[in-house]
Image (cartoon, rainbow over all chains, first blue to last red; front, side, top):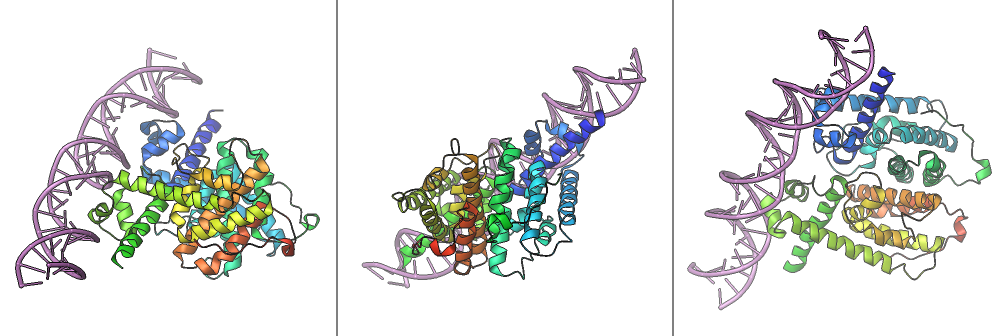
Length: 196
Length: 196
DNA sequence: GAGCAGACCGACCAATCTGGTCTGTCCACC
DNA sequence: GGTGGACAGACCAGATTGGTCGGTCTGCTC
């Protein structure tokens, strides 16, 4: 029980740090900020990750893992509403468990403005939706970015309010509708829950 | 022509400062950051607003004005899809002209997490959609927050990429769909453009 | 063309904040 | 009763902070 506990603390640190990096950027997030968010002293936090850079790397690596997991579960579906739906459900489940990390993954995509982007791993997620920021045409690009922005914000809010299960279906529905596939509900492809 | 020019510079400062405040929070945004974003030296910026606090107040006041303007143009419509649509179009137009200020207005609503919220003026906007974060039921609350998150991100991105007119309709459509009123297009209430 | 005001900048300052270290303390387990 | 892991407080040198001061440059007015 001691090992899982340590791992649990570490994951908590990574996700909260990621949330701060996503919102403020790495440079503007101090070690003290992360420590406060986790409920540790600065020294206590540095006991888990020996330096700020080490923490950053661990966060990025974890985000990368999650991004790959999402892409992995959708990669073989053909583009279309069914794939979008599937990608959304997988991503929402991951995000409800790790909202900060997903927010960080989506940060480059949802902050196309601003010239201080975290060099994070949004590409994996965008790939899951078959989108390339440079070439994808406006209608689709706008809808995907809009849906992902909503997803990032809503999962963070749900997590903070402890509403992860209660809000899940509403979040998925909201984001899917944002993508703009107009179909009667009955025709919507069904996809089972996915573990996060 | 000298007075309008000054005003134009000031508005540019306010919007860019607001964008930074929205993303990083007031405390984590330095005067130098704002100056860089505007293309002035720190001293040059402090020539327009005598202190960081003065700048903050000016930003908040401006955000308040815009929020009131939005609410003003929807306040008399009865709740429902037509009002939502109208509120969305007005808000999008304001946001395409002042994306940073709108992002700041929406920050408290779209960052229900995090305990360092700017005491900004999201209430006015939420009022426009008939939403109260405390009492509104999850389905509606989730959809409105999702739609507003998408709106904030998309207008910032559009502004940064100089796509304000090209993206407008897609942004409105995305956010409206996110709100989840399922109706055939033809029945959608029409609302004229509104100047921002 | 002297004078003036407004827009702007570089150098500077005291105060605070930064990442990181060192020296503990507490506690579970052997 | 010793050992090691999980933490915290005090501390440090250097960077960043908001803000001031003196100055330049432009355009305008008389």
